[in-house]
Length: 261
Image (cartoon, rainbow, N blue to C red; front, side):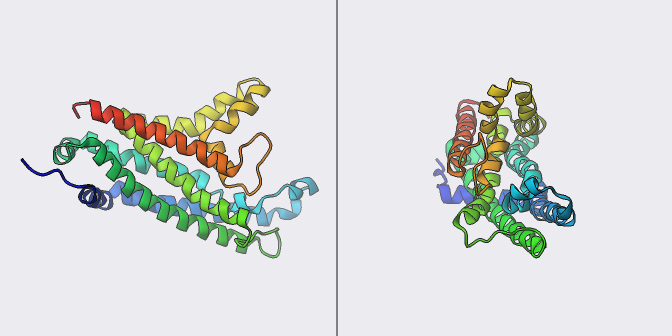
């Protein structure tokens, strides 16, 4: 009987898979470009039209979350990375080989989560800090700026990277549950786009309660130095999104453990 591969061996194997699959490399590149590029575009637009803003809009302006606005576009790319890291194996049939090589299925899931988390936290944090610094340099001299010396600002930038990383794991969990790329990506997109639209159809009192639990709103709260009305604090938003992630990945892991493949 062949010995069971240990976790370190499985992690190495999953890392090789990740870096040799074109969709993963492309997704990482898009995540970085969207975060930095669109963040720079938004901040440049704000600078150009700053003189047209009313006194009220200037008073409530947040230079931190606006400079991190590229993450709101990158979140879709990063979710797709997580989905395809699993679903591509189902579509190609290579999942059978993976499960034969690693009979302990939860170990396989753990290895995928480790690889995805490490890659995404590096890429997302790097992109978040670059887009923040670039955004503040664009604002400088015209628009109010923020500094990383401020603990709340530093937390917001760090949490922007954590937000994207958790979304990638949610994508992975959906891939485990649904096993199909199109279905998983559709559900992921719905969580970020369709659910907020449905919430808008609810009575105002319900909107104020339900809105803040949406993943996208949790992300906004995580990236804001000061909590907005009806939103959670950054730390509470991180906790709730982490619980969402654990629940979805846990459900996917349980389903993988029970299925034939």
